[in-house]
Length: 150
Image 1 (cartoon, rainbow, N blue to C red):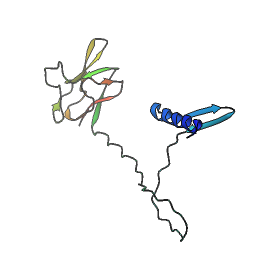
Image 2 (image 1 turned 30 degrees about the vertical axis):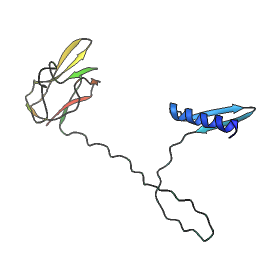
Image 3 (image 1 turned 90 degrees about the vertical axis):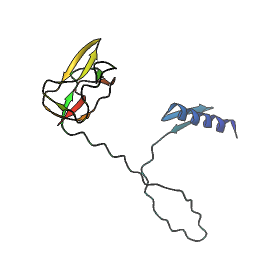
Image 4 (image 1 turned 120 degrees about the vertical axis):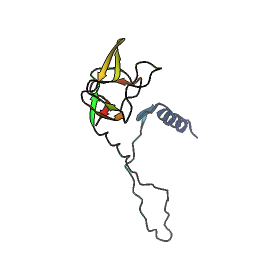
């Protein structure tokens, strides 16, 4: 293998290692650009081959985009600020609420810590906890759902 081929192979390896989409190699007035593209989804099809023709065969699978998860139902209780969500008052105490629990308006459903200050997150309505969207210790942003009440 020539020195140029080895260098291009190394460039391809570096692109893969560092997740690069494009790289250019220049030497003695020659410039070669390697680009990584995402192929379009392929659909398997059959091809007729006449005698004497050469056909290349490959296993081709049909691409199917992953389905988006369904949004939880109910009324979301959202974070009023950026901070760390806590589902319990301390690691040794049970969570404020879990799926299936009944809550009343004004009941604490979690805590948010911001700059060493803990703020109660209270339910604005009565109902049943349908989902706890934030996990304990998760950083949350304003408007991000924490708990869904139905």
